[in-house]
Image (tube, rainbow, N blue to C red; front, side):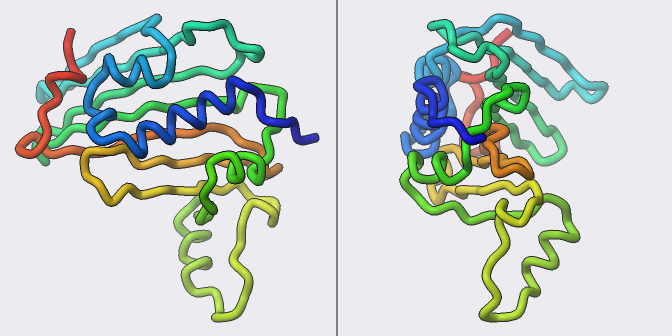
Length: 190
Protein backbone atom coordinates (compact mmCIF):
# COMPACT_ATOMS: atom_id res chain seq x y z
CA UNK A 1 0.00 0.00 0.00
CA UNK A 2 1.35 3.40 -0.97
CA UNK A 3 2.34 5.77 1.80
CA UNK A 4 1.99 9.53 1.77
CA UNK A 5 5.35 11.19 1.24
CA UNK A 6 7.15 11.56 4.54
CA UNK A 7 9.02 14.78 5.39
CA UNK A 8 12.31 12.91 4.81
CA UNK A 9 11.28 11.78 1.32
CA UNK A 10 10.17 15.34 0.50
CA UNK A 11 13.55 16.58 1.75
CA UNK A 12 15.29 14.02 -0.49
CA UNK A 13 13.26 15.10 -3.55
CA UNK A 14 13.92 18.76 -2.71
CA UNK A 15 17.68 18.07 -2.49
CA UNK A 16 17.68 16.30 -5.88
CA UNK A 17 15.67 19.17 -7.38
CA UNK A 18 18.13 21.68 -5.92
CA UNK A 19 21.08 19.78 -7.46
CA UNK A 20 19.16 19.83 -10.76
CA UNK A 21 18.25 23.54 -10.66
CA UNK A 22 21.13 25.35 -8.91
CA UNK A 23 24.07 26.36 -11.13
CA UNK A 24 27.37 24.84 -9.99
CA UNK A 25 25.98 23.13 -6.88
CA UNK A 26 26.93 19.64 -8.07
CA UNK A 27 30.54 20.89 -8.44
CA UNK A 28 31.04 21.62 -4.71
CA UNK A 29 31.14 18.81 -2.14
CA UNK A 30 30.52 21.09 0.86
CA UNK A 31 27.50 22.63 -0.90
CA UNK A 32 26.18 19.12 -1.64
CA UNK A 33 26.40 18.24 2.07
CA UNK A 34 24.39 21.36 2.87
CA UNK A 35 21.80 20.67 0.14
CA UNK A 36 21.19 17.10 1.32
CA UNK A 37 21.43 18.16 5.00
CA UNK A 38 23.96 15.43 5.79
CA UNK A 39 27.59 14.93 6.72
CA UNK A 40 30.13 12.27 5.69
CA UNK A 41 30.29 9.19 7.88
CA UNK A 42 32.63 6.96 5.94
CA UNK A 43 34.94 8.31 3.21
CA UNK A 44 37.06 5.96 1.12
CA UNK A 45 39.45 7.00 -1.64
CA UNK A 46 40.98 4.68 -4.21
CA UNK A 47 43.36 4.76 -7.17
CA UNK A 48 43.21 2.23 -9.98
CA UNK A 49 46.31 0.74 -11.63
CA UNK A 50 46.52 3.70 -14.06
CA UNK A 51 46.28 6.23 -11.20
CA UNK A 52 42.67 7.34 -11.72
CA UNK A 53 41.10 8.53 -8.47
CA UNK A 54 37.79 7.47 -6.96
CA UNK A 55 35.98 8.53 -3.83
CA UNK A 56 32.99 7.02 -2.10
CA UNK A 57 31.19 8.46 0.91
CA UNK A 58 28.24 7.34 2.96
CA UNK A 59 26.40 10.45 4.16
CA UNK A 60 24.48 10.55 7.41
CA UNK A 61 21.49 12.90 7.75
CA UNK A 62 22.03 15.73 10.25
CA UNK A 63 18.61 14.97 11.73
CA UNK A 64 17.51 11.39 12.51
CA UNK A 65 15.08 10.03 9.93
CA UNK A 66 11.77 8.35 10.55
CA UNK A 67 12.96 5.41 8.44
CA UNK A 68 16.69 4.79 9.03
CA UNK A 69 16.90 2.08 6.33
CA UNK A 70 17.45 4.48 3.47
CA UNK A 71 20.83 6.02 2.78
CA UNK A 72 22.70 8.71 0.88
CA UNK A 73 25.92 8.01 -0.98
CA UNK A 74 28.30 10.38 -2.80
CA UNK A 75 30.61 8.92 -5.46
CA UNK A 76 33.39 10.52 -7.50
CA UNK A 77 35.19 8.80 -10.38
CA UNK A 78 38.02 10.00 -12.59
CA UNK A 79 38.40 8.76 -16.18
CA UNK A 80 41.94 9.38 -17.41
CA UNK A 81 41.37 8.07 -20.95
CA UNK A 82 38.67 10.69 -21.62
CA UNK A 83 40.15 13.39 -19.35
CA UNK A 84 36.87 13.58 -17.44
CA UNK A 85 35.33 12.99 -14.03
CA UNK A 86 31.89 12.25 -12.66
CA UNK A 87 29.98 12.95 -9.48
CA UNK A 88 26.86 11.16 -8.28
CA UNK A 89 24.69 11.63 -5.22
CA UNK A 90 22.44 8.61 -4.73
CA UNK A 91 19.47 8.43 -2.39
CA UNK A 92 18.53 4.79 -1.85
CA UNK A 93 15.16 3.95 -0.27
CA UNK A 94 14.96 0.38 -1.64
CA UNK A 95 15.49 -1.20 1.80
CA UNK A 96 12.52 0.65 3.26
CA UNK A 97 9.36 -1.36 3.81
CA UNK A 98 7.29 1.70 2.85
CA UNK A 99 6.01 2.28 -0.67
CA UNK A 100 6.10 5.84 -1.94
CA UNK A 101 3.96 5.92 -5.09
CA UNK A 102 5.56 7.16 -8.30
CA UNK A 103 2.51 9.36 -8.87
CA UNK A 104 2.99 11.07 -5.50
CA UNK A 105 6.70 11.57 -6.23
CA UNK A 106 5.88 12.94 -9.67
CA UNK A 107 3.26 15.32 -8.25
CA UNK A 108 5.64 16.55 -5.56
CA UNK A 109 8.48 16.99 -8.11
CA UNK A 110 6.06 19.18 -10.06
CA UNK A 111 7.00 17.92 -13.49
CA UNK A 112 5.73 14.98 -15.52
CA UNK A 113 8.08 12.03 -15.65
CA UNK A 114 9.26 10.59 -18.94
CA UNK A 115 9.61 6.91 -18.19
CA UNK A 116 12.44 4.80 -19.52
CA UNK A 117 12.21 1.01 -19.14
CA UNK A 118 15.26 -0.73 -17.71
CA UNK A 119 17.33 -2.89 -20.02
CA UNK A 120 18.45 -2.34 -23.60
CA UNK A 121 15.83 -4.60 -25.22
CA UNK A 122 12.96 -2.97 -23.30
CA UNK A 123 14.19 0.48 -24.35
CA UNK A 124 14.40 -0.60 -28.01
CA UNK A 125 10.84 -1.99 -27.88
CA UNK A 126 9.67 1.32 -26.44
CA UNK A 127 11.36 3.25 -29.27
CA UNK A 128 9.57 1.23 -32.00
CA UNK A 129 6.08 1.32 -30.45
CA UNK A 130 3.48 2.12 -33.10
CA UNK A 131 2.25 5.70 -33.24
CA UNK A 132 -0.91 6.17 -31.22
CA UNK A 133 -0.10 3.40 -28.72
CA UNK A 134 -0.04 4.66 -25.16
CA UNK A 135 3.46 4.89 -23.68
CA UNK A 136 4.50 2.30 -21.18
CA UNK A 137 5.31 3.16 -17.61
CA UNK A 138 5.58 1.61 -14.18
CA UNK A 139 1.87 0.77 -14.30
CA UNK A 140 2.68 -2.20 -16.59
CA UNK A 141 4.37 -4.08 -13.72
CA UNK A 142 8.01 -3.58 -14.74
CA UNK A 143 10.72 -1.44 -13.09
CA UNK A 144 11.32 1.95 -14.70
CA UNK A 145 13.52 5.01 -14.41
CA UNK A 146 12.47 8.57 -15.10
CA UNK A 147 15.34 10.77 -16.24
CA UNK A 148 15.64 14.53 -16.26
CA UNK A 149 18.57 15.57 -18.46
CA UNK A 150 19.74 19.05 -17.59
CA UNK A 151 20.39 21.38 -20.54
CA UNK A 152 22.88 23.31 -18.35
CA UNK A 153 26.33 21.66 -18.21
CA UNK A 154 27.10 22.75 -14.61
CA UNK A 155 24.03 21.14 -13.04
CA UNK A 156 23.00 17.61 -12.17
CA UNK A 157 20.93 15.22 -14.23
CA UNK A 158 18.38 13.42 -12.08
CA UNK A 159 17.21 9.84 -12.40
CA UNK A 160 14.20 8.57 -10.46
CA UNK A 161 14.31 4.79 -9.97
CA UNK A 162 10.91 3.09 -9.68
CA UNK A 163 10.25 -0.55 -8.86
CA UNK A 164 7.78 -2.89 -10.46
CA UNK A 165 5.23 -2.11 -7.77
CA UNK A 166 5.36 1.60 -8.78
CA UNK A 167 7.20 2.39 -5.54
CA UNK A 168 10.12 4.78 -5.34
CA UNK A 169 13.41 2.88 -4.98
CA UNK A 170 15.70 5.89 -5.11
CA UNK A 171 16.92 9.04 -6.77
CA UNK A 172 20.32 9.96 -8.12
CA UNK A 173 21.75 13.30 -9.17
CA UNK A 174 24.85 13.10 -11.33
CA UNK A 175 26.87 14.51 -14.20
CA UNK A 176 30.04 13.90 -16.20
CA UNK A 177 32.52 16.76 -16.62
CA UNK A 178 35.58 17.34 -18.77
CA UNK A 179 38.64 18.53 -16.82
CA UNK A 180 39.26 21.24 -19.45
CA UNK A 181 35.85 22.74 -18.67
CA UNK A 182 35.29 22.01 -14.95
CA UNK A 183 37.80 21.49 -12.16
CA UNK A 184 37.19 18.87 -9.50
CA UNK A 185 39.10 20.83 -6.83
CA UNK A 186 35.93 21.48 -4.78
CA UNK A 187 34.89 17.81 -5.00
CA UNK A 188 37.94 15.60 -4.68
CA UNK A 189 40.26 16.02 -1.71
CA UNK A 190 41.93 13.38 0.42
